[in-house]
Amino acid sequence: MNIRDISQRLRRERGQALIEFILVLPMIFLLIMNLVNFGGFFYAWITVANAARAGANYAILGGASVGGLATPSGANVSSVITEDVKSLPNNASVSVNACQINASSLPIQKTSLIGACASMSSLPTDPEPSNYVITVVDVTYTYQPFIAAFSFPSLGVYLTLPPTTVYQRAVMRSIQ
Image (cartoon, rainbow, N blue to C red; front, top):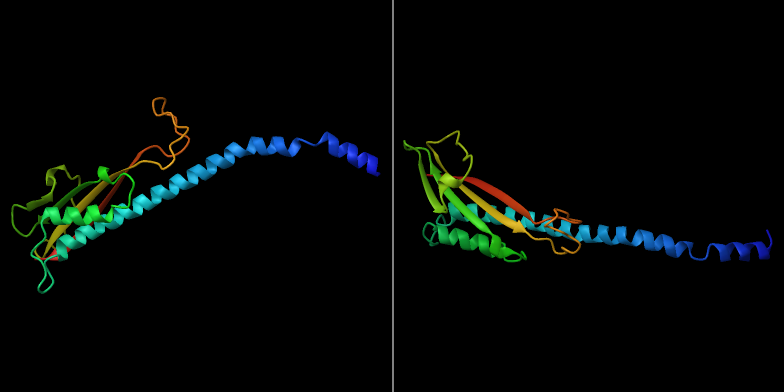
């Protein structure tokens, strides 16, 4: 190969890299957009799980410390959870439902802290009902993607995550 052949070959392939870049650019953009939205979804999922756990923990241990507060009310549990999810972008959509189940007395007593115990599906059973009170905290959050461009909800077409409901339940036992 001489220099003339090399220069003619380069002239023929001059725009090839630009065309390939233009064809691949939308896929790279979509990949980055989905990476941001999935990261936000997992952050919301972990935050809601931690908030449910913190609410249940506060419900069973809130009045247990010496010189501490009295037994926590539903408003206290709700404020603990609301404070935990404050960093989420759509935190107004958080819904909290908390219930305490005392199976030592018959009939089984279900005390609602927040919401209605009857609306909670499949309440857990305790293998040692005479010794413990079960506290169940359900937290529901509607995740809205950070980048919702290029989505057509009326057609059911989403190029990224659609709005998704995150539901977490925390169950803890406390000694009577």
